[in-house]
Image 1 (cartoon, helix red, strand yellow):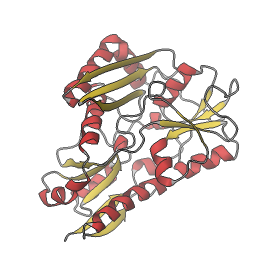
Image 2 (tube, rainbow, N blue to C red; image 1 turned 60 degrees about the horizontal axis):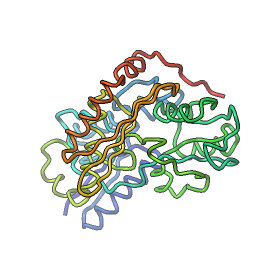
Image 3 (cartoon, rainbow, N blue to C red; image 1 turned 90 degrees about the vertical axis):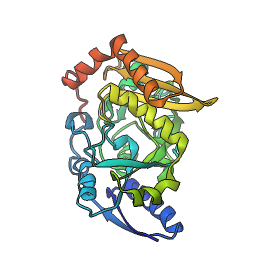
Length: 311
């Protein structure tokens, strides 16, 4: 049996994910050691994600540890992993996906619809902001960085009337007490890869690839590959207002995607089906670009958008 070193961020959620994978590997008889690595995204906590603009901000330092042979594999939230991996790396496994939806969390209010006029809502995601503003233009959107515990604590202390978070993280941590609404993907299309974990290894490391092969879920690989193909076609990362959610229906992949202006004044949605995940993702991406997504994204990449301010 192998001795494996896993690289992970140090947040509560990242550690839960790393320990989850560690437990599965130990059950196979392997010895596992966890290495906690602080990333750029962990160090910059006072700036909205959309303004940081660094691809791989949650993964770069972990990949450096892989290259330096300080770790053998890395456990990432797939949505944090850039769509274009450097040639040095490969994704050896996509784990079975948790609930990919976003959730509305609040102490006082039952849903987005029941929030009072001009309510303060916390999110640092332009994707969430854009879709929320399309639904409720009156909402005051404010950036809320930090780990899940920090965001929930700010909500409970009254800094915000509500926050929007990923269902997957709350489910994994068992912190669902303030979840009031599971937001349908047709209303709030998730981030590409949301709810899935990626096991990253050095490219060509056949021994580690064989060890983690049992973690790979075929359906998750197909659907998230489709979502990431769309994201790649649009040139986006986790900091831009692009959503993508694919699922398998009757043996075919159905992709729902969105590109939106951060202020919610223009929202482009597109749905299509296909058999090839990469071709489908790229095709839907091309359609969105033709319909005006290119103009929206040029505005965002040119920083022609308003950054929400703290309340």
